[in-house]
Image 1: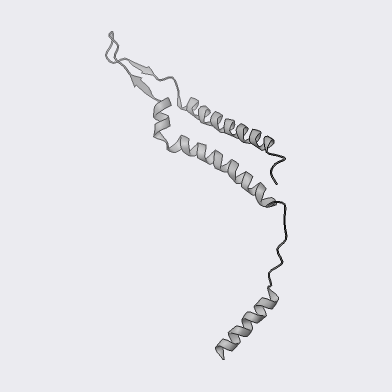
Image 2: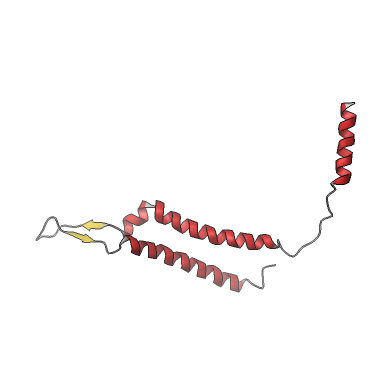
Length: 113
C-alpha cells in the first residue's frame, strides 16, 4: 500500500511540475551582467587583500633600509615609499587592470554572443 501511494504521488508530481522544453538562447542573459559585476568586485577585493595581508610587498616598498656610512654607523635611509604611496600603487595597479579589462571588452564586443 505504501509503495502504491508513493508511486501515485510521484505520478501526480510529474504531471504538475513537468519540465519545459529547452529553448535555444543567444547567451546567458542577465547572468552575464552578474558575472561582470562579480569579476570587478573580485579585482577590488584581491587588490585589498594584497595590501592588507602581504608582508612581502610591504617589505619591498615600505620601511627603512639600513646601511653603513663611514661617517656614522647608526645612519638610516628611508627606502622612499611610505604606506600611503604603497596604497596609491595598489590603487593604480587596480585601475590599470580595470582599463585593460575595458579595452579587451571593446575589442571583443561584437564577437561575444
